[in-house]
Image: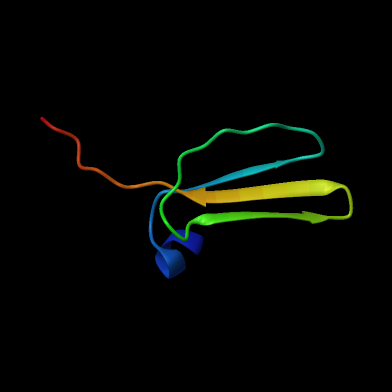
Length: 51
């Protein structure tokens, strides 16, 4: 449902302790916490595979 509403190539990391270094599309980065659980959502560019 998320991809159909906001487009493809979203990634989600959820945890209580993690580090990250990600490349994301402009406007495609969201980081927040609920209590002690942290959520990182980010969108990457979709490129067609060369055959």
